[in-house]
Every structure is written in C-alpha cells, then in structure tokens.
Length: 95
Picture 1 (tube, rainbow, N blue to C red):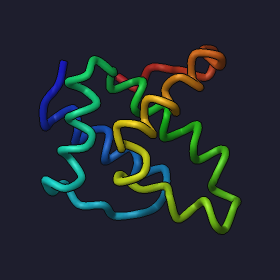
Picture 2: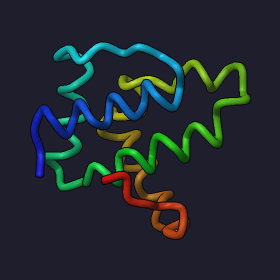
Picture 3: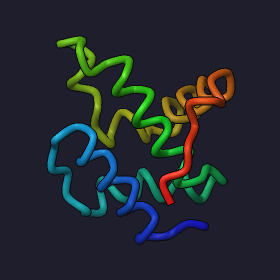
Picture 4: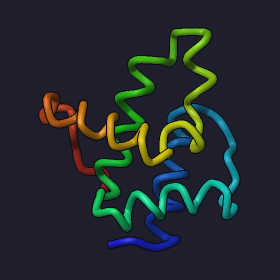
C-alpha cells in the first residue's frame, strides 16, 4: 500500500528516532512515496531508518545523512533495504 498517510508515517518515524523535524512537504514525501510505489513496505522503510541510525548516529560525518534525501534516494534505499535481508531478525512491525 502506498500514499501520503504511509509516507507521513515513515517521515514521522524518522523524526521521532532522530529528534529532527523534517516537514511533510512534497520534497520529503515524494521520495518515500516513490519507494512505497516500488513495492517496499512501511515496515521496510522504518527498518532502514532504524538500521542507519544504529550505524550512523554516533558518526559525526554520517549522522548528517540521516535525512529523507539520502535515505530514500532510489539507489541508496535499494542498497539499504538489501542490507536488511541479511539482518531479517532486526525487522519488526510498527503497526
């Protein structure tokens, strides 16, 4: 399932986990919506966020990339989601 409510849910999760305040504007939501339209799930999107936070949050250089533009870029996201498959036990449901 795709659409703005799901994209907003993913964006809200990113904000909650990073302490940021990315706005629910077209520039941010369209990236997430595009990944959902490609067939990725809300849970996969949230798992990518959580995984990248674990990896990057304490790295001064990389923590700046915990943003929609980087996380949900088509090429980047496909790579990050692929990394989840080997860590399937880390994927959980937020619904």
